[in-house]
Amino acid sequence: MSARQILDVFKTNWKGSLRLALACALLPVFGAVLLHAQSYQDLYNFDCPTGCAPYGALTRGIDGNLYGTTSNGGSNNLGTIFKVNPAGTGYQVLWNFDTTTGAPSEGLTLESADLNFYGTTSVGGTPSYGTLYRFDSSSNTLTILHEFSSTEGYPFGPPVEGTDKNLYGVATTGPDSGAAYSLKVATATFKLLPNPLPGYPLPTLFLASDGNFYGATQSGGENDLGTVFRMTTAGAIKIVHSFSGNPDGAAPNAPLAQAKNGKLYGTTEHGGAQNEGTIFDLTLPPSSTETPLFSFDTSGGAGYAPFSGLLFATDDNFYGTTFVGGASDLGTLFEFTSGGSYIPLFDFTGNGGTVSGAYPGNTPLMEDTNGLFYGLTPSGGSDGGVFYSLTPKSSLINITLCCNWWVILDQPVTILGDNLNEVINVNFGSVAAQFQAGSSTYLTAEVPSAAIDSPVTVTLATGEQVESQQVVHILPSITNLDPSSGPVGMQVAIVGGGFAGTKKVTFGGVKATDFTVVTPALIQATLPQGAKTGKVRVVTPNGSATSEVTFTVN
Image 1 (cartoon, rainbow, N blue to C red):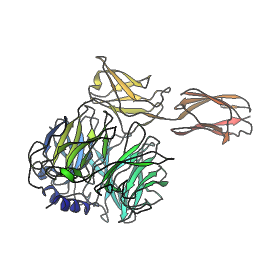
Image 2 (tube, one colour):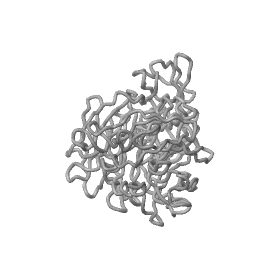
Image 3 (cartoon, rainbow, N blue to C red):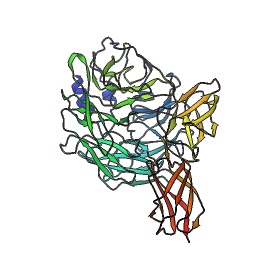
């Protein structure tokens, strides 16, 4: 079977997982090609009795292990949930999917409120359109939360966490259509969001620095060649770019990533100069300017058909895979620098060789807090797929937050990392936070009232400081009004947090024309003419907050 035929087989399996047929459809093995100074290591080879054809991104748990799903194998031959440690040892099957739950669709999401994993299945439930489930790794218990209907479609990939700590996902409702849904985690309440997606949604959503979700569709838009769209937590949808084929690309097919410059980066399956896919960037609205950065092609054994998207790493460069191409036509690993240079790294070699693995498909790379990158291939190794690591030129240890970067005053956040039982200080920017050690792999910290948008830093007993790559975004919160009643012209202290950059203050819906942000935790506002008894509202670049108490105008 040729690489192009394999690619065609892959594309016929969007609604389900790529099963054993693809896991075993390997081409002959050729010698590996080392093209740069990184190192590749085959850490674990999957086998079907314990799960094979792993698909979707790996997710780090609070215990430091990596969690994922296989699309095939296990005791019922319908896939598994597994965990493995970053060294590739301790592989353990935690759940075997069956005809009731269905087969998993691409990975898991760790949720911050209850620290459980959430995922979807592409078939299963009644009437077999798939399910949304919760998985408790402490007891290895899986609970079906929702069974999808024909109206709701086939769910694609795990849901992602929003700024409100609820989960949001997408599903396909037809060959050129899709829908979005939400899950209120506290009550396990499922809701189909009101607006249809602008085309066939292949990748999962991405929560960007403006607090909105961004996703892509393979079809739809002005040219029916795919779109990038923005979605709010209420389900309002706006197309921010319609693809045209050349030069910008066509059929975007992977989750987006965001760099420190604020731009979104992604890949397309088709389009570009050779119609073999592109790398592009996109500025956030209101400008929404898309720029093609690189066109894939097949010349000289180069990789093409990038399916997994891009990892923005701590070295400020991007890393990704191509589904096919390379010396063995089994896919490649590449780097795309922040300066715009495309650097081939490794060619996959199938069942053996120094880069064992094949056809990485929809298996995005992830960066662990040890600075190494980890990925999966559904084929290669011992025919059941490979769990591998990629060591970059500059391996930078880091910390990360579970499970998104939007936090609120005085609420605990979970910080993931290594050697965290040795931490003596936690800072949000320059502001110290109270914290409590959980283990060597996680701790919890309270968001301090004076915090502003900034990275998080932990200090170890050795004096070493470890910083997060991402910037924490502080959601506004009003905790007190002093006083809570008074006449027009009185100065009112609004106490809380997340007030940096406040754009608007209202009393009972009436705008205050005179207010000062004294600190990120304090606003002094003058009660305006026409003010009405009611709630006080503050609007910041990160969102809005409304007081629980009512301000009474005397």
